Image 1 (cartoon, rainbow, N blue to C red):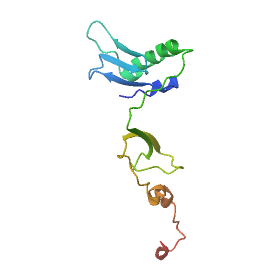
Image 2 (image 1 turned 180 degrees about the horizontal axis):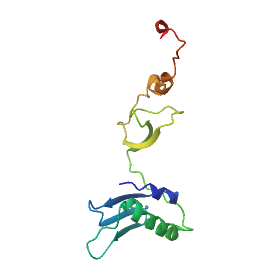
Image 3 (image 1 turned 90 degrees about the horizontal axis):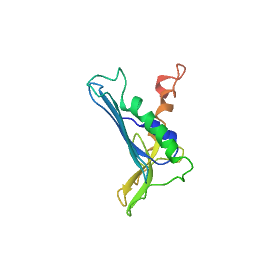
Length: 143
């Protein structure tokens, strides 16, 4: 599931959406370092919610609305990082260390000593540029 709507809280949160295959139930379960909350959307009798009514679309907006109200005026809390865990910025495509100017990177955690140590190769960064490197005026023997 996708809980992207939870980003609206602009604080560390975690969560998971869920939807039954027949669209009869949708939910979002989310948490901060000090609060957990679940939202279920469905009917008492067995009938579908409607087309596209998933946990992301039906339940997570309710969760976000509730959490905004509950957390209003409260300090931002961060999840504690266990001892021996480090965060490293990696290239999403290659899984190697990201260069500082990388556009597709993400911080992810590793146990100490297991993080990548090599950077994404230069040619992977320039893959898109290579597409436009040659034009119709470039002789074939110069490619």
